[in-house]
Amino acid sequence: MINPTNMTLTDWADSVILSINSDELLGRLDDETRWQDWAVGLLTSGTFSTQTLPDPYQFSDWRDWAMRAYIMLEVN
Image (cartoon, rainbow, N blue to C red; front, side):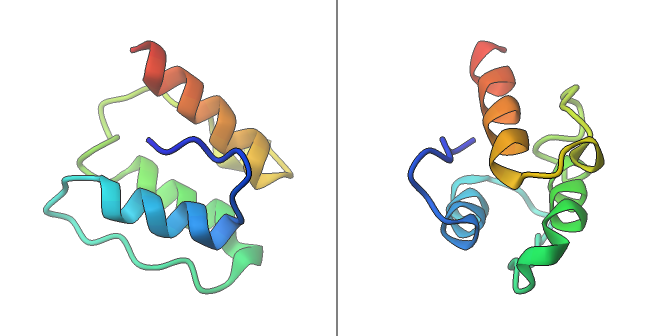
């Protein structure tokens, strides 16, 4: 997972896509207002599907969710 500090949402999402090794395709985040839908796609991808990560719909700010997920993945 990529640390979202000092990144824009689209830069972070693009970096995450490039960093994961997954056979499943995760589409680019084109509409920032739908970041939670994109994040659910990320969570259900093969790379993260076995991880217990926070529900993006419980967060109103993408950076809060991304930082929480980042910390949880770095600890595991």
